[in-house]
Each structure stands twice: as C-alpha cells, then as structure tokens.
Length: 64
Image 1: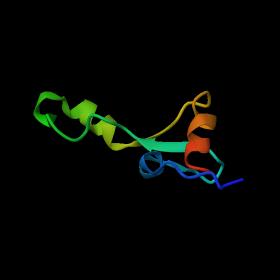
Image 2: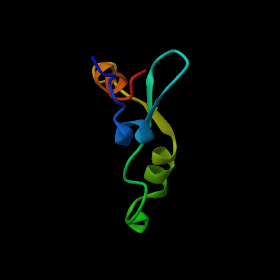
Image 3: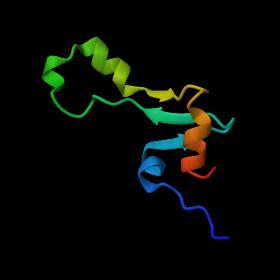
Image 4: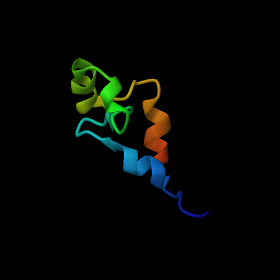
C-alpha cells in the first residue's frame, strides 16, 4: 500500500496551530482594494481559524 500524498495546493494555504486547529488567511485581500473600506481590509489582514466542522477534511489533505 502506497503512501498518502499531501495535497500541495492545500498545504500552501493551510497550516496547523500547536493545539491542532487549522489556520488560514483571509481571501479578497489581493486586488481591487480601492473598492474596499479600510475597516474591511484591516479585518482581512488577520489570520483565521477554520471551523471545526471543516477541520478534519483539511487535516487529511495536508496529512497532519
């Protein structure tokens, strides 16, 4: 039986915290920033933790 490969696209976008939660960055912070309010852009700067209902799926993709 072969090894399970890491899904590289997911590995670049998600990582794990020390406690095992899945960490991600917000989207919509790359272009068309002139249309977005400063408050909205400030919120998008910060990282976020993925919902616990989605976490097992993404943990399996990044093999951790």
